[in-house]
Amino acid sequence: MGRRLRGPWSGNKSGRRARDGAIGTRTRPERSIRRFQPAAQRGSLSSVQPQRQYHNIALVGFMGVGKSTVGQILAGMLDFEFIDTDRVIETREGRRISDLFAQEGEAHFRDLETRLIREYESRQGLILSTGGGLAVRPENMASLRTHALIVCLWASPAVIYERVRYQGHRPLLQTPDPQARITELLNQRKPAYQQADILVGVDFRSPQETAQYITNSFRLLQNRPSKGPSAPAFPRSAPSKP
Image (cartoon, rainbow, N blue to C red):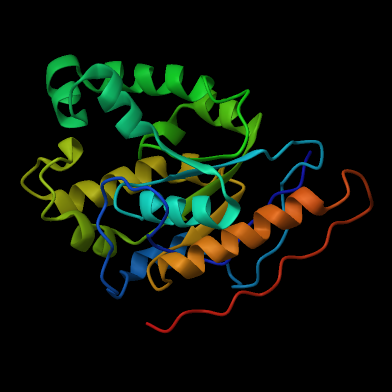
């Protein structure tokens, strides 16, 4: 079995070309997020597979965690092309995601995501910012693993709520209690998000800090030997101040 990569928990938004999500305020996370954090802040290699090729970076995670903003910064740092899968689908379908959900249903939208994500398997030099539910389908994660380093950005329910509470284009949050819905969806998706190569918490890190950590990790993976008894540990990343 391959070895798995986990990063320190922190991150946020900023970048080369943009998508929706607003830059979040520094809000203290709920205590419940601690159940999902690793014990140590030190980055380490765990199940990143030596035989895999890392030509691209795929950002997964819940809405409002900063995938678009961090992705654009990454694109600038690495001179990669930034692609927002939600925006590609909206352009092709000629409708907003919220309209697709209302008119065709969530299952139809997820099918569009799956078909789109397979198109990038032969591409190189991409930063993919994916929809919040894309990681839930195992076939999507399997597709990404053929070419990309998968990075999950994670935030606590309280922080996500503060970031998205005034955004009316989030169809899954059109409920009487959106914060409770966020918590529910996070709990449902947590096993899928934990399949990422790197897990980065974004409550207290700036978008630039998050992008720099991911860039360093990506370059390290590209430069390390494909075979050998062990790989170098990731450098410790300095925590941001709340």
